[in-house]
Length: 178
Ligand code: 5GP
Figure 1 (cartoon, protein in one colour):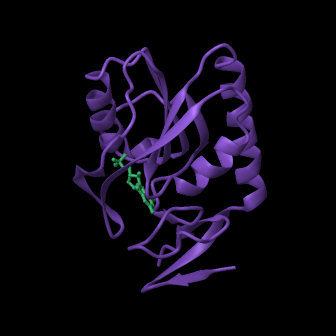
Figure 2 (figure 1 turned 45 degrees about the vertical axis):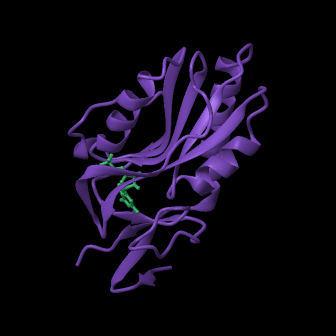
């Protein structure tokens, strides 16, 4: 069903079942890869909160999770600069880090964040993202665990917002092209 959010219309793109399947697939890979490790997950707020919560419930290796608040979006466009508003409260020196991101668009947020994290001397850094707009890449970054590659269209739902609204949709909806 189409959804009206503020002044825009959105159409269904990925339903709950598809998302759940992707979350389980990613969690199984992480569980296998980190069997004898104790990773520290770092989820990027706000958008990744729902994905991080669902994914973390499926993780069965000893691990911790922490959160940072980063943002580069205003409306439906990337602003190109990354603003950090809540920093990390855990030591990451010598830790195996898994970053949890909702969506990788230009790659600016993640490349900036990974550069910052590397200064703190982690043992390893891997990236886990639910969505990747491959065609929008400006700052290439390897994504080690990925849910879906999607076209370069604005999406909302499952934690992702349009100007603060729409995060509570259970599935992912795409901006309706007029
Ligand atoms: P990047 O820095 O890779 O250009 O953008 C990444 C961030 O922009 C994501 O964490 C997300 O917050 C936001 N973003 C990128 N594309 C979309 C989109 O289609 N919908 C929403 N709601 N946010 C997006």
